[in-house]
Image 1 (cartoon, rainbow, N blue to C red):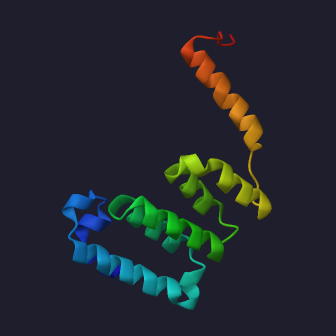
Image 2: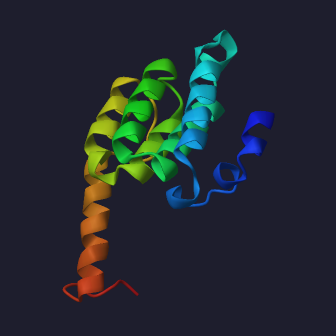
Length: 132
């Protein structure tokens, strides 16, 4: 992690316009090397860091590829699924199906969640009165 301190714009979370391309490539290579080593392959923290770097500084296509790679290496890591849902909300159904297939617990089924979201949207739109 000392290597990341050499790139203050990446460590501080600044936007991609302030990060030179060579710095981003060096950080990518550093994370790729760390994730190929035996202890790093299963490191949820490294996968989450890589996903964050790609989503902020790279592209969403790269971030999606990193998400699916991380889910292959750490299939039971709920934080990775939650990061994926946060970044790719439109893939909510696919990610929750994958969670169910891997026996990762969810607090409520997706169908119940859809009902709750529709009710909240109806209340906000004024079609339904909110309960007292």
